[in-house]
Length: 524
Image (cartoon, rainbow, N blue to C red; front, side):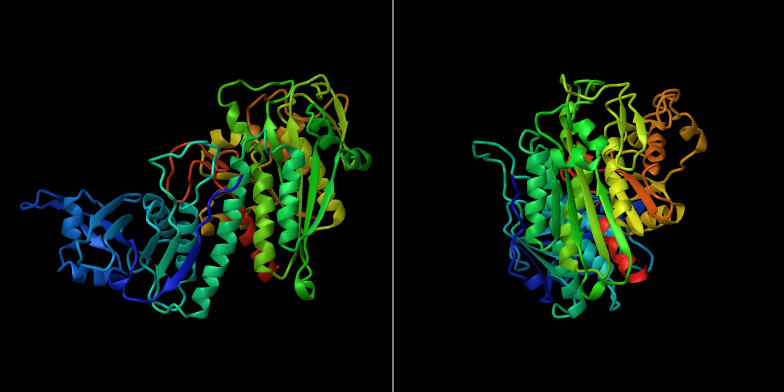
């Protein structure tokens, strides 16, 4: 099941007022002030740069007219105005950008969300132009990239499974033009190419997460990732249940043995041209295609969202597709452990002792802490294969949502690498916050019968997110810098669409992982 694709994204340097499109999107800023005695309107709209010719065509009354229609310039606001022939496009769409920044263009994330909001609001319009504010200087790459990504991601829609046509369901925008000073500029064209690759990977990740769990069990998920990876030119290795058992992947085997759909481990490999910069990066993503909790079964309420428990693997697999297209000068390997956590007569049990890939023995106390079991094996394999940096992402703990909410990921691991993840996340609009790995949490995970307990029984759910990080640390060798990115909140959006997020899978943290790989390629 795949989503409709935006058919085209291109640059244009034609006067926005003369563009032959179905709608032209402009930005407006909010400005507080005294209530106007004549109009009764509080505050004043400010037109953002990029739409000057549109304002001229409206004889300077554009912002006044938009204000009469209720526009305030607040972030996420969209107001549509019929042009009645004043410009070539039949519709001008004003998207709110919030207060005007002092002496600079709006922040990239503001532009990214504005572009996504506008394109989603214009579903049904075949061709749309974006005349949003970009910096006047030559280096507007971050802002242009943000507008392009926002447009492509805001226009995403999962194809779904409806059998009857929906009269009110309008098709996503098919063609997007971005107004720039020079459409032929090589740097600007490179940003479009990059946005198509990265946003395309995010959309693929969203497709996998949104697919019904009966259609994406471990074998079929492995096949889907492997097929996409081979088409992208990546190296592919898939271990089935027999190979996993023979190879000593006790955690993956244990979690997967309760399901009739057997587990898999997919390894993807990108080898740079000319050998790269000598560094090696490993990406690991949790791929639990459905999580009932196993014997420690979850409550029924909300369990349907557990189809998203493979969002980490989806993000890692999709990020590798973007990496294959962008060709950074660093070697990258990805490890996607896949299993379905089901209750049955063959399920693993609380009290079981499992021997992991690195030889450590784990006492199972809660079968709903299955993610750390499959990840432990995959991370140990990544270290055994050899790597300098290891980035792992997973919808690991409800504690992440309690601590940091639905938009902010938690990151744990090597402090310097966690800081790097935070900086990159802030830059791409996927924020993460470094969290500690306290010694007292590890002490509480001591087992009477094994090397470590799977959870801290004494602390129960206290510091739940930290318990996950402390456990995973046991499977990273001392010479590897590592970061665990918990996306339990931002990996899946159950609310109404907002910005460039649609309902369902978000694709977080595909863009973070791609940028981290590029950063290692450039800076080591």
